[in-house]
Length: 354
Image (cartoon, rainbow, N blue to C red; front, side, top):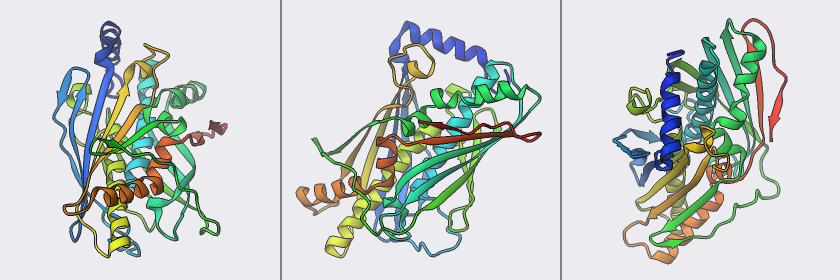
């Protein structure tokens, strides 16, 4: 046991998935619901971790970005983008700590500021923005050699599932009932307002426990907790990084679909979106080089409001998908810049993970 990570249990897991590939298939589920007058709420559903069903149940009330009051200087609810950036940052740090533990490194501390440069399609409305670049500023404290820490930390470029989901092209599918909806990302209109940067701080606490808080004056500064299931050395303190991805995506799409209905008809009904992400850990654990390290697929299914026809519901939901910042972030490849420093001295040669 080092840094709260059991190196021996990781070796045992590798042997299990070599013997049976089904043990490597992890299914994460989340649902989000927008209710007029009550806002946006998202929650995890049971995860399937290989052959184990894990009873995961965490719920979050979120800012929808349009029914709420974006001018509030310190909103008390996170946005779907907050969840997504926290998920990417925590997953990257966790991979670095796990890799360092396997190499005999003891971290006194490790933290990150994850930032995203975004280009809004609409002024002051980030749910439809386009992410143009992501950066990690990682600070470590350890008595290990700085070169070794840099080598291990840069493993996140290849071994972090959420990082690879952002860096690589990821397969996304969207359904209304049994119908799959075709889509293509909407382009930013000419004359769109200037870009801005959204930042979150990610702090390692111990083992698989992390916290992430916003750093911007107009963002939510309350910390998000992140943890793993008990089956994987966690204490069921909070959703894990992959669950935050599907939570964020489901929430943004439910909110945007309601917004489209509101814009077209003057009122919005209740929209629910169910998200599912499939992770094949054979890629992460270097068992099968052909397996993707990031999400294999992410799918979303929408439940339309009562009384709304299927054609209109499909149109509103498809528009939400095409305009969604998180759909574009997850589906398309994005450059990531990694900068590493120690508390003792600067060690970092910035590198773009393209």
